[in-house]
Image 1 (tube, rainbow over the protein chains, first blue to last red):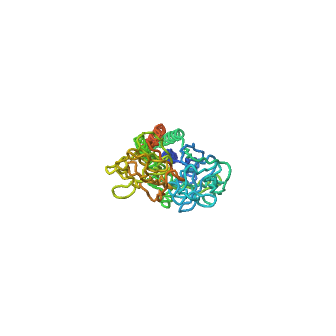
Image 2 (cartoon, one colour):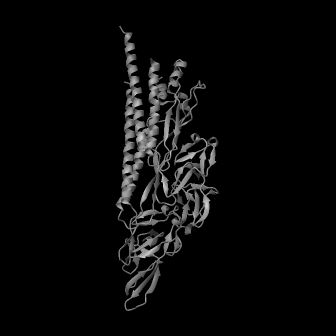
Image 3 (cartoon, chains in turn purple, yellow):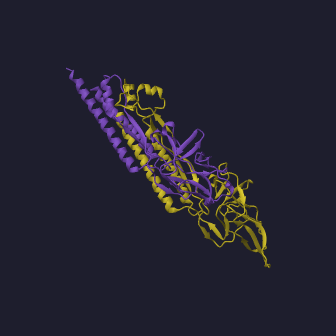
Length: 247
Length: 289
């Protein structure tokens, strides 16, 4: 009977985590290049099995996985020449102090020494390392052309090509603050030259869908509630059982 | 026992709890995440309100709030002690902690040019800023070319700051003409040939979005904007001057209204998260009657 309480209580816990994830998705509904997360409770009943197997003495947890959805976000036109969006596969490579990071957030500005940097001040990487534009003091916005393949032209002169990479195993990517992703060797970074189009003057919106998140929130909330009801129910039953011994 | 039970509900074994100090405040995380969302949207509305308030401000440039996600907490999923081939070890779980506003980016898109027929109104068609000298001697930059004459005949902006380099218009002048490349000529009364009295110089910045607004349509340079680059109007990379025109605000009301609706809805949806979490916390509290 006590196991029953645990089983029901276990049902409450992943729903709390789900709400955490949904809360983060919803908070980032307006964040450029944000990719939503989802929580999967893979084998809920195995926790119960483990309790049985261990005689209820040792408690084990749940099998929960989290994954990031790399679905395409909508492209929003901004007209700013250094706002660039990827449609399709691919990530921009950004050189940060702690090594290369990957992002879908193409909201850049240009520094006085000609680097293309994001809001964190980290530089965009091209095929020849950090992209550096020559003669920035004479540059007009209209001179800068970025093709759909990511080639960067100034007045029809090829300067560099924006490096676009993809990964063999996207599930190995880890999120970091600043709409960055971090990859380890296992992720399998590959530079790609097709499967995407670059759009200059556009930003990729967050791929969070409010309706979908609200539905998931209601679902998690109700599921939490039913587990809660189950705990209460069993507690009542236990109370009854305890009363049986009374004379 | 009670402690173990609480830990268990949170999904972590006691060992996890000790080894991974990151697991804390698990119950309030979603609340704080949603609150960060509401706070960010409030700032977003502030920016939109400022844009809308300046829809008629000469040469005003709209801003937009730029969001980024906050750090991620890595929670180690509890792994069973007796794993077999049927139970895989799950990967780590990353839980995001919300959103932040990282920057308000100013959009230096050209505003429309509106004819005013005032000979001292000058608009810049293209890149560039006028320089004005503040009373403290430092230089500020502006695109607002609605100049006036000071008592001693100098060209000043609406705040009374003197245009740099100084242009002094003598009292004898009956007409003033400013060419597209910045040459200021006057016609003295009784004469037929115009006389050049000065040239208006422009500056531009590699990263104008890095300029800091100080109000009164003025900007000052920062490390992010870089040093000013001086140039003649109409030369390479600089806009031309248009006498008798003013640049209107580049705020698009429809766009701002759409942004406002989006921000309001995003605010609302984050408040729904808070309500949901509150309900769940209430249930958790009621577990022990």
